[in-house]
Image (cartoon, rainbow, N blue to C red; front, side, top):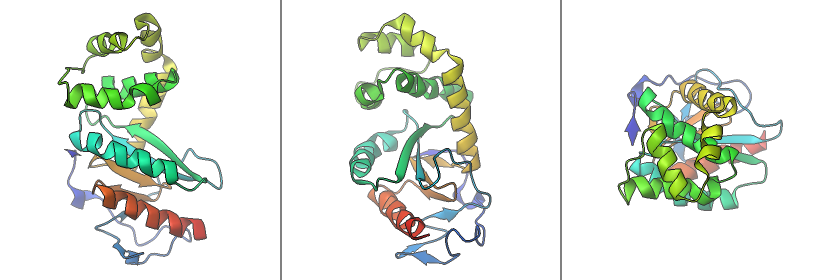
Length: 209
């Protein structure tokens, strides 16, 4: 797990209004250890009636690489009103190039084809992908026009999404990756398959309201 701050530094509120009861357990999962209730609601970009789930990840995080197949399988079975958004973190300026890589691939419609390949390049093939130049070199080897990629990579749209991602990681007080944010109210630290079981329980409660 990529760690930024200690888990105990996250404040847990007594409750956030009527959305969910301020109870110690939901479906057997304990508030304060299995999940955290945010002190302040985080911004939500989904439409009314939808439940937004954010996956906070970093391409350099081996645990995120291992979590990816679990998340992909879970996304295929999620309820229709649950919207999942991958959210690359940047705990330092050194992480911003890979954060932009994700959003450039997204803008080009190439996340499906290359998202897992980025993880594999870093963790399996041991390719050093960390700077704009090395990222562009790698992308070009995947058959993408380098000039076109750089246009997306350096665009205002990608810069804006990267900035938004950092705002969301701060709003959820993300302390490590992988992690999930649910409905602007709950934070789940990476616990492998258990992470998704906790998300299912929270989503089930939210769908009752």
